[in-house]
Image (cartoon, rainbow, N blue to C red; front, side, top):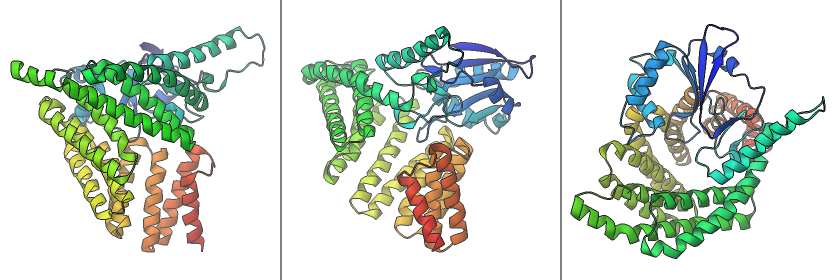
Length: 467
C-alpha cells in the first residue's frame, strides 16, 4: 500500500509512505511530516526491528523521499541478492552492511526506534499506551479482521457522532488489553480446530508446509497469550500445547521422510519444502527449552540441534547463515538451561558458542545481532565472578543497543541494570549509581512508575548504594 505525502514545511518535497496491508495508524493526530522534519537529510526512514530479532529493520512502514538517491537505493535493494532465498528485510541487511561505509548510507538512511513507524510484537504483550502504529505481522486473518474491524468501526462511530465533545477511543480500541482478549478468543478456537484435523492424519504425513505453519503459528500465538495472562493454570495449558505442537509436527515430518528419501534417490535432492518443514519442527522444539525438567529441556535442545544440522546440510548455500543464526539462538537457550541446573561453566560455554557464531555472521548480517549474545555472555561472566570481563561485554551490548534502538528503548534498561550491579560488586559505586539511575529513567519512560520486577531490582540496588 502506498501513500503519497506532501510535506507542509517543504512543499517542493514529496514523500511516499509504504505501508504493509497489515499495518494501521492508531493515532489520527500522528504527524508523519514531523518525523520527516526530524531527519531532514534522510531519504529513507524506517523503524528498527524489535529487540532480539535477527534482522536490522522492519519494512512494514517506510517513509521515502521522492529523490534520485531513493530510487537508486530501492533498485539496489530489489536486486541485491536472490529474492528466492532471502526476505526483503534480509536483503536490506546485506545491502546495508556491504555498502554502509562505502556509500555513506548513514547520511541518507535513518533507522528509527522500533515503535516510531512500526510496532513491537506481540502487541498484547509489548504495546505501550503512547504507541501510534500497529503492525500485525505474522498474525492470522481471523485476528487481523477482529482487530482492524474494531478500529474501523470506532472511526465510523466517531464520524457519525454529532456530539461536539466526541472523542476517539484510545488507540481506536486496539489497546494492549483488548488485543490480549481477542488473541485468546480468536486463536483459542482456531488452534483447537486445527489440532483436531492435524492429529487425525499426522501419522500418515499428510500435511505440507502451509498446514503445518498454520498449526504452529496458531498454537504459538495462543500459548504466548495464555502465558502472558498470568495464572499458573493457564501457563500449564500453554506448556502442554507447545509440547503437543512439537509432537504433532515431528510426527508428520517423520512420516514424510520416506517420501523425501525417494526424492533424493530419484532427483538427487530433497523435496523443495523439506527444509522449511524441518524448520517449523525446530522452531516448535525451541519453545520446549523452557518447559519441564532439566532433563526434558536438555533433550529438547539436543533434538533441535540435530534437526538444524540436517537442515544445514540440505539447504542452498545462501540459506545456511539463517540456520546458523538459529543454532546460535539455541545455544543461548541451552545456556539458560544450564544456569537453571547450576552449571555456570557449561552455561558460559554455550553463551560463548552463541557469541562466536553471531560474531562470524555479523560481517554479513550486521552488528545488531551481537547485542543479545554480548549481554548474555556478560551475565554469565558476572555470575562466575569474572566481573571485569563482564563489564566489557555489557558495554558492547549497551553501545549496540543505543546505536540500534536509541537511548530510550526498554531493552536498554536491562543492560544498564546489569552493568550497574556489576559495578556495585566491583566497588565502583559512583558509576554504579549513574547506570542504575539511567536504567530507572529508561524503565519509567516506557512503563511509567509501575513497580514491576525490574524496577524493584533497580530500586533494591540503589538502596544498597545509599547504605
